[in-house]
Every structure is written in C-alpha cells, then in structure tokens.
Image 1 (spheres, rainbow, N blue to C red):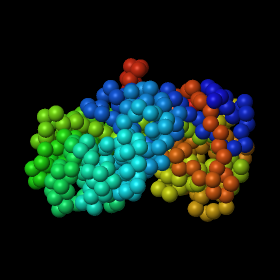
Image 2: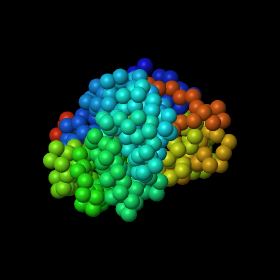
Image 3: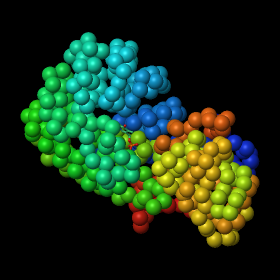
Image 4: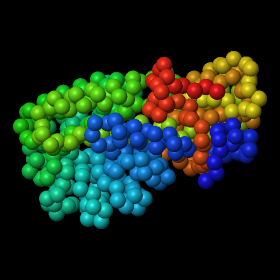
Length: 397
Ligand SMILES: *Cc1c(COP(=O)(O)O)cnc(C)c1O
C-alpha cells in the first residue's frame, strides 16, 4: 500500500478523481494498547465498527485477543484472518445454522442471548454442549449516548430472573452483558447500567462469573468532547468491585468506535459549489452514512497547497448519487473560498464510516493509502507524550 505523509501530500502527488481512504495504523495501535493496558479487564473488539482485515491484524498485534462478532460472515472472516483469536458471538438473535457452524467449525464458545427461545436455540445448535459461556443481555437505558441501542435487544427487568436461572443451568460460565448505546458521553451511563446488573444478580440469586459492559466508549468529534477514557474505566472498575459476584468473576468490555474511529479519514474532491452547498464525491451511500442519517458531525479540513486566507463559514455537503437523501447537513466549517476542484479531508471515519460503504449508483470505488500524520482529533495523544492542557487535542492545520 502507498504511504503518504498526509492528505496534502497525497492530493498534490496524485490529484485523485475518486475518494481515498487514509488509514493510520499507528492510531489504531495506540488505541488498542491503551485499552489493553488501562481497562481493568478484558477488551473485545466489536468487529462491526470496521471489519477491515488490515485493522484486525493491527489490533491483534497490539494485544487484542478477543473479538465480538455478530454474523456468521464476521465469524468466518475473523477466524480466517486471525486463526488464534477467541470469537464471541454477541448478537442476541442468531440463526440456528450460524450458531452450529460457529460452535462446531470455528470453535466459538461464547454467545449472548436475551430470551428463553434463544437459549433453547443455542442448546439445540450446540447439542447441549457443556463448555459454553452464555451472557444474558440486559436492556439498559441509552439516555447518555448519542446513538440509542435501547429498543431492539435486551431482556426486560421482569424477565431477567427466570432467564438468568435457566441460563445458569446450561452455561459453564454465566455472564451478564449490556450496551449503553454508542458514543456514551459520561461514565454515568455505565454506573447506572451496573446498578441494573446488581439488581438482576440479587433478584435471581445466581452465581455470575462474567460481567461484560459492552461498547459505547466515545471518540471525539466537533461538539462532542467526552471526558478522558480513564474516568470511564475508573467508574466501571468501582462499580464492578461492588457487585455481589463470584470472587473469580471477569470483567469484559466490547469497544468498537473507540478502537477504530481515529484509524481512518477520507479525502474527497469538491465537484461543484452552489452557495453554501458543496457537491463532493462521497456521501450517504459511501462513508458518510452517519453524517447523512443521524446528523453526525465529522471534523473537516481544506487540503490545498496554498492555504486559504478567508475566514471559515458553514457548509453542507451533497454526495455523488442522484438522490436527495444523499445530503450531509453538517455544518462543516471550511474557508469561505472553498470551490470546485478543492480537496477536503474528513476525519474520524474509521468507525461506522468506511464499514458502511455501498456501491449504489456506481460510486463505491475508493482508494486506500497509509497516512503517517496524526488523526484530526485524538483521545490518546496523552499516553506517549506528556499530557497537554486538555485531554482532547483538536488539530487544525
Ligand atoms: C455495536 C456493538 C458494540 C460496539 O459499540 P461501540 O459503540 O462502537 O463501542 C459492542 N457490542 C455490541 C453487542 C454491539 O452491538
């Protein structure tokens, strides 16, 4: 893969006609080492955030040994890419055939569930195996998160006791898991969920061997600057230590976004300007799904050899497809003289950006290069260098 120092180096050298993904292996490595060293338990990578085999290799080499997978295709792909990795099938509603193949062909022993029906399915599909780790998913609030995961999955408080008792019978290791929603902006999201874990354990009076606090760890975006990740880890650790569980119980988490948001950015070209609207060559059906559909704001930077001396103004983007929905409202702050032919770098697209690209309308092709500079924002720049004034370093250059 080609290497460039930065988006500017790439744009001036190649003047690319198609969008280009810039990957930053050093940023993913730094995030993984941070979780491996500082989370007070085991960190699983949630593969759906970005299933790129290159990224999986980097995370593995940085100490991430367990992977949260949600479909049989993810199981096969991770098993092939990282044959020694431990796979955990954490989707609470699975096809019976998928469970069977995962268990018998790929050695997957950890499954989540949120209903008696799913428990029965797992028992049938594994022929009542005696070496299973089964995690009961609780429904918890997404109130502190930017993207809710509170409606679809999770056993309701009234069902949890019976489900925990039934699962205890079938499990070698019994776990409880939850997901507070993506981009949780305060550690309280986890401490409040841990109160529900406590209530469930007390009510069911079962021995619990594993508590998995799921994903939701934030990254940094314009207008969304979360507290330091250490504050989340400390709050989770304290709440875990307080639970009435087996003294050998394990603590797990499943970060997706936090491990890979900084891994990739995107270089796009402006094809047309209409007032404060820029028509760019990637969009809602490419890496900008969240920017279009949930109004997510990503950092942007004009990539031009002679820096603009005009002040910033607010732009919105149109993507390349012939569809009104292919619109990203932003606002994206860029110099007022931004025009057709200019390149723009859009940052923090490593999670839920590159992973969601489609080929709709013939616009799926994208190049990939390695960039050696720093991501446009980082939650991790404090670890190797002395800490700066703020935990969050937003770079604008
Ligand atoms: C999506 C998902 C994750 C990762 O969530 P992030 O918000 O990206 O950290 C973890 N666990 C499960 C079960 C998920 O569905």
